[in-house]
Image 1 (tube, one colour):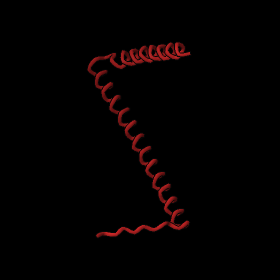
Image 2 (cartoon, rainbow, N blue to C red):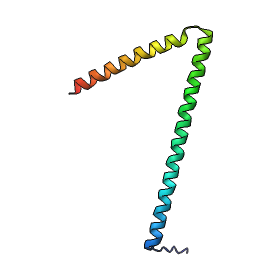
Image 3 (spheres, rainbow, N blue to C red):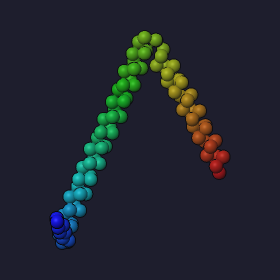
Image 4 (cartoon, rainbow, N blue to C red):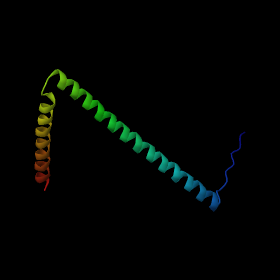
Length: 88
């Protein structure tokens, strides 16, 4: 039968393992942050490309899009304020 053996880490080994895992964790966080920024930038480019294409096809599209966005944001903020006031 297979016998499993384990041993306890001494203080220096434990500290080294903790430092390594903290460094790995920090590196992973930085990688995720870079990926998030890249995705955000890519999405912005895609939106701009679609809006530019639509504005070329339908002049005034971008202006109307931004006006609709402004109205939608204003309505959203009003609804949030009303919901917040009703909770108080």
